[in-house]
Length: 219
Image 1: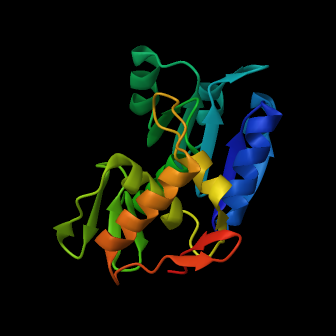
Image 2: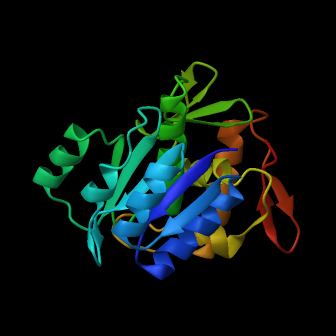
Image 3: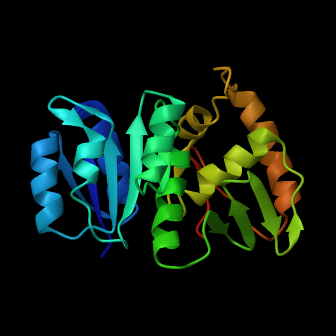
């Protein structure tokens, strides 16, 4: 079973991340203090360590020093989008650096990418039906042919890929489609994009309508 350690002192953020990661089948151990994190990281093995940068008793870099296993993935979370910190993180062995606020779907994709890279498997890929999604490049492929998707259609596809087998309400889907400028997608617009996405995917991905609730993609 994949074990993930999370160092995050914001309880609201931590609760959301723990729930999302556990829904993906990961075992999550959580700490809010650097001193507790250092002790746990020295005593136990984790497949992935997710470290907030600013903690009440120190910084994430201090906890990073307790990770000595090269097979452990390391992701930093921070509100500080500072080039110096980013360079320091990567020079210190970080696999990724995520700036808050971030979209949950992107966060989960980066977690999967890091875990796969540590196992020597192809990275940055999600699969949905016969479609492969490169979340770093922001492209989707049907076999070897790139799909011509609009940004909203792409984000809709990624949302389904991150929630395979789950019924998503229209409200949940709409929430995931906020664009970078903070503009909200209206309910009637979602219907249009669902129709266009289905047409482009054909039989490669079956998006099932759950009457009165929302949509589901099983594989």
